[in-house]
Image (cartoon, rainbow, N blue to C red):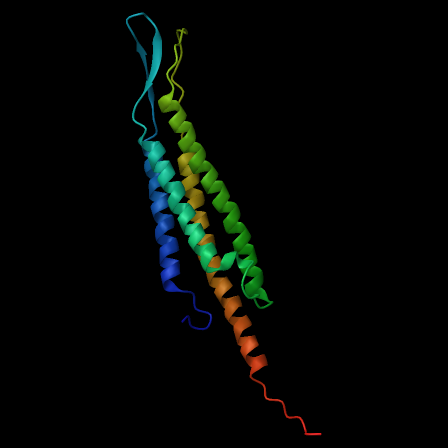
Length: 190
């Protein structure tokens, strides 16, 4: 059982660990982005040939780990919408602020990561004939996975603060309920 106002250490560790793994996969995806080289075949046709598709796998892994982190936290806190109400006050206000900020940051991170993975996958599967003389092979823009990694860190920090304030507001509500239910009425008998 959790102590009064204390967040579960296991939940915090899992959220941080899953987010850090997602961050690592995002950095790895950035470093292993597909690059293309122009190749001319025997028929004098020019093609772009891309190297391995490892970055797409890293991007999908980053997406899944961050999604798992967010799902775990929202499951534990019941997405702040279900379950017993939080006590009014500053802790509830901060938990609402951190909740909405973490969701915004989460959506941006996931969009950057999955968008980068999809664009990277498209380039590695693409082969087309080129007839231009000065043409370069299109590749994923630098920094897409890095932007996702930065927002993964923002999401992690916001989630930790959200969980801490959520637990404070939740424990205040349970203490008020316990106090209200524990009063003994002193009424006279008719």
